[in-house]
Structures are given as structure tokens and as C-alpha cells.
Amino acid sequence: MDKKQYNSIWAGSLALLLLAGSCSKSDETAAPEPSDGRIVVRALASDSGQAPSFDRFGLYIVQKAAEGSEALAGERLHANVEFTRSGDTYVSTPAIAFPGAKKLRFDLYAYAPYRETALEAGAVTLPLALAADQQDDAAYTAADLRFSKRTNYAAVTGDVAMEFDHAMSRIDIVLKAGYGYTLDDFASAGVVLKGLKNEGAFSFVDGGSTTSGAAADIAPHGTLTRQDDCLEGLSAIVIPQNAAAGEPLVEITANGERFEYSPSETFVLQSGKRHTLTLVLSRSFEGVTVQTDVTVTDWLPGGEESMNGEEILPPTGTTVEDGDGNSYGIIRIGRQYWMDENLHTTKYNDGTAIAHITDGKEWMAAIEGAYCSYDNDDANAARYGLLYNRAAVSTHKLCPEGWHVPTVDDWNKLGSALGGTLNDFDSWVGIASKLKATAGWPAGEKATDESGFGGLPGGAFRADPNDTATAKFYYAETNGYWWSDSDFSGEMTYYYGLRTQGDNLDQYVGDRCSGMSVRCVHDF
Image (spheres, rainbow, N blue to C red):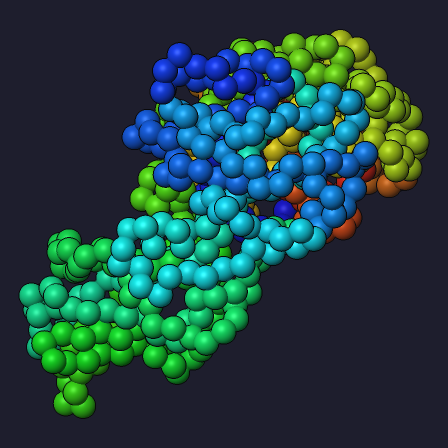
């Protein structure tokens, strides 16, 4: 089991929940009651308890007979349907619903703020024309394009998670006084961004942006305000693009003096990122100088809003059932909801049976999804759950609708929520005891299970080192292993483990033929 280093980048996102329901309500803030299959959107509140900042968004839906490639350029079931805030929910005019036929699949595309005209018939790109003067609140807000899409969705009773990301790039300006100046000298400074294009297009298919037309001078939004040893408060929203090396990007005028910042190398303005330019303005024998520190961070939903506390919308109910009808408890860890035990379904969530393979040679040769119980003993299945190969995970049908096998990003969020530290091997240090069940490990094991995860040493079904064409059972009662739904390469994939006397949630890279446990996490 070789370890490989892997760096995961998490981008903050704004989540909305599409539910089947109607728009009947008794007052402005009442939530619509579900009926008639009408689509209603329940918004994820910010840490202030309020709904997301946009009041309207548009939704496109494409209907397909089966899973397959996107077809937004073709016929659309619903096109640019307007959803408007109603208290803490969003409702559409006109009312829309998913057709009731089974086995249909849908691609959903949502954007905000809403436009009367968005995608032309047959087009998949949204024209962009961001305001050059963003000093006005309305112009700044209109520039902040949010986007979300979900493909190959099977519409069933329940919810659909839609996560809205910032599609544009944000630049924040911070000024510091260097030699020969004080902050008071720059309190009324004028700041302009130069050499950036504010026209282009955004693709609903690949989520990328292109620019067109001539470069513009962009006046940022906000007012310079003193914070400790700096002035901050100016921000601009721009189309993701590259600012050329050696060309002026920021121009500052103050008390008759002009300062310019030109990046020494190509400055990549990334989608969904905040780029903070801290500019130190100084005097020198050569005149005025600008020293720069650039910080790039995730652009959290709603601008300054954080994503914590009570804003998480939980799954419906306190339990969830798999394809066999087995029931699992639901636990919350940080901002996530997890099943409280390992999966032990023998069917996918569409009712299709999963192949049951007990022979080691057949297991290693299998191409289709498969499961077994440790030592082919039903008692172990009841205790540890079943072991699945990577092909079963790759179907994305192991977990119930609305749930999924955790990705590397999901595991990292779990580790962070439990206060762990990520080491050079991308393992989470110091959290194993919080994940281990208080019973089921060897005597003397440090296990508090304060997370409620209840991790057990369920072992694995993996290649025999002396005969790699045959799988054997290893490590039950000493180690537990769980799949991720993230691949390292075409042949290798990531998984996670807890070891006896181990303090870490370890990340590993292994082959796709191994049989390991699965724990499901909620989509939202």
C-alpha cells in the first residue's frame, strides 16, 4: 500500500436545495408546502441566518432518456425559468416540475443574478459585459455571476443539491504606507485597475470564461477604510483572464502623485478566487515605488460571509435507507452529514443487483462492480458492513439518492472539522481516536468515538503479494479501510484507513481491485 502525496484544493460554494413542492404560503416568510411535484428552492442561509444575497436566479433543465453527454445546445425541457425569493425559499414563475416517468435523466443549469435574456436557442455560452465603473452597488452586484450545474440527475422524491460557485474573479486592494508616507496621505487615494477586459462569455458546459473586445479601466467598489496599519475596502469583480507581465495593472493617485503596479510575471486571475493585492507605497531616490504582496484565497459564498454554524440544511429525516432497504443513522461532523455505519447493500440505488464474488481469482479479474463479506462470513457483514471493489464505487449508485461515496475533498473536510493537521502524506494527524468505535478494536486501543463515526477494523480483500492474480482477506480486527471516489491515476485510486495504535486518518493510494468498506456522505 504505497502512499503518494496529493494536494486537494477546496473552493467555497453556495448551496441551494431543489425540492418537490408547491408555492402555497400563508405569509411572506412561510415556506411553500410540498405538493403537485412543483420545484421549490430552499436556500442555504448564511451565518447571519439570512438567505443568499441574490433575489432571483434562472434555471435551465434538459431532459434525457438515459445517462449521457450534455445536450444543452439542443431541445430544453425548461429554459431560463425565473426563481424569485419568497421568505427563505425561491419559487418559480411559471410553476415547473419534473416529468413523472421513471429512468429519465436531467441536466440542470442555474445562474444568478437573473437576466430576462440569457442563453440563446442552441447556445451554451452566456454573454458577459461587466461594468467598468463598479463604484455603484448595483453594478458591482451584477458583475458577480454565480453558477451551478448538475448532470445526469435522476429525479426522485427528495432533494437535489445545487452548489453555486462564484464564476468570476475578485481583486481586493490593500494599501500600506512605506518610507516617506503615512496612511493619511492615501486616505482619499484614487484607485483604478488597468489593462483588463470586461467583455466576453461564460460557458454553461465547461464553466470557463473567455474575454473579447478592448481592455478597460475598472473603478473598484467600496471605500478605503483604515484597518490597523493599512487601508482596505476596495474590490472589483473581473472576468477570469491573464494580466500581462510588465503592463500596468493598478494605478493609484494621491496628492498629485501617481503610483503604478505592474506584475513581474503573468498574473493569472482565477475563477472563484479572491486576489488580494497589498501595495506598499514608498519614496526613494528614484521617485515613488510600489512593493507588492499577492495573496490568492477561495472566494467564499456571499462575499464576506463564512460557511459555518447552523446554516447547513440536513438530510430529510434521521435515517436513510440503501438499495436493500437497510436503515442507517445520520450523524453530523462539521458541515457534513455522514452515515453512522459502513454500507452493506447488495443492490445499487436503482435496484440493480451487485455481483457477489467470493473467489479470490474471480475477484481480481472482475471488471464489473462486486461485493463480498470479510472471510465470506455473514457475521462479518453484519459487524463491519460489506467490502466493495472500485468498479462498484465508480457506478455512483452505491449510496442512496442524495448521498455519495466521499471524495478526497470530503475526507479532508472531515479531518479539518475534527481538528486534525494535514501532514506531508495528506494524512490527518491526531484524529483517529475521534473516529474509532469504543468497542471492536484490540484491548488498550485509544478510542473515544467523539465524532460518532464508529469506525471499525473491517479489514480488506486485496491481492496476495505472492500471487497478485488472487485476492486474500487481510487486517480484520486490526485495520479499517474506506474508499474515496477520487482517482490518483487510471489504475490507482485514493482510500483512507485507521490502524491499531495509529493516531492518524491515513491516506493511501492503491489498485482498483481491492475490496474495502464504504461510508456514504450527504450530497449537501
